[in-house]
Amino acid sequence: MSYLGIDIGTSSVKTVLFDREQRLIGQASQSLAVSRPHPGWSEQDPEAWWKAVEGTIDTLAREHGLAGLRGIGLSGQMHGAVCLDRDDRVLRPAILWNDGRAQAECAEIEAAFPRAREVAGNIAMPGFTAPKIAWLRKHEPEIYGRIDAVLLPKDYVRLRLTGHHVSEMSDAAGTYWLDVAARDWSDDLLEATGLTRAHMPRLVEGSEPSGELLPELARRWGVEGKVVVAGGAGDNAAAACGMGVVVPGSAFVSIGTSGVLFVSNARFSPNTAGAVHAFCHAIPETWHQMGVILSASDSLEWLARIAGKSPAELANAVGPVTAPSEVTFLPYLSGERTPLNDAGARGAFVGMAQTDGPRELTQAVMEGVAYAFADCQRVLADAGTDFETALAVGGGARSETWLRIIASVLDRPLQIAADSDVGAALGAARLAICAAEGAKPAEVCAAPEVLRVVEPDKALVPLYREGYARYRAIYPALKAVGAEA
Image 1 (spheres, rainbow, N blue to C red):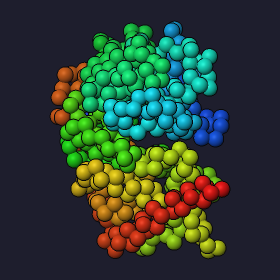
Image 2: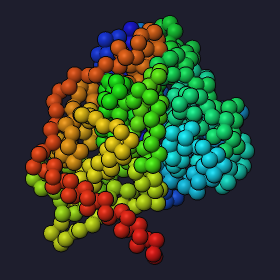
Image 3: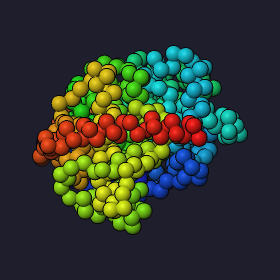
Image 4: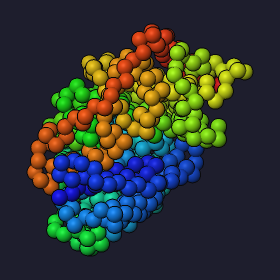
């Protein structure tokens, strides 16, 4: 028996194949491109996701065989708006999670339904799905008028796999159409964007079946017998399932394209004052809180493009850190969510000198991202949520220097676990096991073996506390200058 976990990310699609004992059999990935037709916009062609999914499964079928495949789990970038007509044809490129065009529409939705934050558990943000549809209603009315269904990225892939419109709680919670406490669509939130339940997919829990693999695809991949497609999860909840972060109080830090500080909760615990996200988890009767920053490893990618080097080259050149950089970096290259909720926020280097070069700027970027995580930690603490340690996942977790900086800024040890580089895809595969075999999520989504722990540098902790205070002072100062201009 084997199980596929498919993670539809922003920069790539990764598909992994595991056996019933969760041993990795094989993996394949294909890159994706992002289109930015205007400043602050971010779009992708849903067909590119599907072609990448087909390609990665083709590879695994050829290299390992899929005759014994029993289940498929899906993980995906959250919040993206895939608009379909009545024949399930894509009406326009999908508007992605890091698109900032719908700032005005957020206020309009909350004005139309004053209890929006209470029901959705979050502040309306441009990255969420509902404001994107409100933007289309205003700016692309001919497209809006033809919308028959709206799907999230992974759920569009599900449609191609099963023929059904289905979503699950963790991803649906990021649309701003879900009553997060009730784990059901909110008619009032839908009405605020002119939609109804008829436009929405059916909802299941992430560990439940959502459909079966279409026969023509089973034949293509040499599959024998029925293949259950699980509800799956949004990327962060899937990563949590992959890392065993399902017990209340357990946490992870994701240093991916975006950055996430994620803590599992036993109950719905909204705290909108600090722009904390309160979402459903991918398993029943569980929720989570998270702080989200929009440019984590993406900040280092940006600097690498300018420097003409790879992110790894820049990170390796920093070496062991003995003191904070005198340069402070704000990682707001695509606006910011937690705690600012400001799509118009922009990045900045402050305190540069003639002697500063790529090494100094790289360290500043790493520290700026770490300070952004400290912002998330602060507002989670304001909500009464703390954590003793966190698993580190994402591409940035490959840098020992960056891990040490983040651990010292947060003053919390970071755990490095086996299979951390396939966390979301592993989580999706684990949910596939639950759906296909009727297994209990708490047993399947166990914490992985911890390979090592990165401890905070006690000499750096107080120095970074001072650096964080400087970091916090810069944004309001720059904001004031911009307002006066």
